[in-house]
Length: 329
Ligand SMILES: NC(=O)c1ccc[n+]([C@@H]2O[C@H](COP(=O)([O-])OP(=O)(O)OC[C@H]3O[C@@H](n4cnc5c(N)ncnc54)[C@H](OP(=O)(O)O)[C@@H]3O)[C@@H](O)[C@H]2O)c1
Image (cartoon, rainbow, N blue to C red; front, side):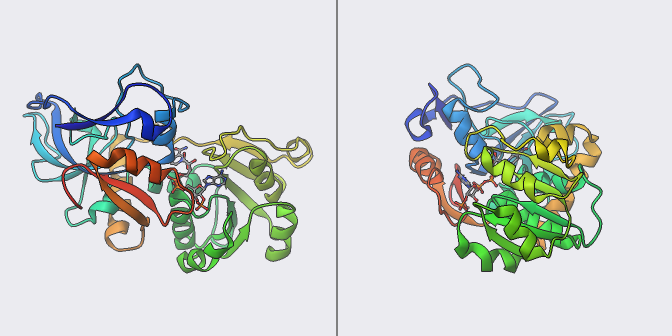
């Protein structure tokens, strides 16, 4: 079978290769074997290949934080999935044609879900959902501000916030995105840069913004911090700039703004396995209903992993780069 391996850390398209490796064999009684149908290339996967992600395993290693698969075989003790079912995997190392995992890590998805969308259900939708629920008790009509609003997480957050009757200020780096994001339910789309807080205050007529959600780092974090109201909260959940958050102390000392962070694994670990399956069942139902959607730019075969990684590194894409290891999806 084919599996992506990195033998050293560096530029993803240099260090990743599609290797032939031995087949995985039959599952043990508590295991599930599934064929990987599709996986996305997320920013965290790029950092994993570069060696700048929080996880840096001994090499060779296989990247891949998420995927969708079809169950090929289950051990005798596994009762919640059967061969033919679609699953997502709570564990990593998914850039391969097949995976063998513990039964509890295989979360079933409903048949009929679009496979490209299913490949992206595991991480970004619950990230957007939990950031809107776990930090501030938001009520209909409350305002939220976010940057990287055109990212997959950002677009999902717009839709989920709109469903709850929340209002969103969406900070982007490309003004041409405004109409598309407003089509998803964005109330305001504004270009990042100097005087962001003043421009937001003018456009919103000074409404108090209770929650800021931020994934650029560096001075961009500070700009979001300045936009939230006194005693508001800013959640830092990624660093597209590679920089640590930088924000003026007066926001914290004089205005009591709280700066905190989010990691999906930590958010899910506070919930029971039943609750986690419930979250994913709800998100999958929303995908099937067409309410949640993440655009896809291009789907590559696993043999073209280097090309796919180069493409994923380019800005200005119209969605995610996906890889389909077992034929087109
Ligand atoms: N903490 C968690 O548990 C968690 C979970 C999921 C994702 N994340 C983080 O969420 C962020 C978004 O992930 P995603 O998968 O949604 O990303 P994505 O769909 O690949 O989109 C990346 C976004 O970042 C923007 N961007 C890229 N480089 C930038 C820079 N230097 N300055 C400003 N903006 C930049 C891009 O803008 P353009 O659209 O203009 O190209 C694009 O909107 C990442 O930082 C990721 O690590 C965190």
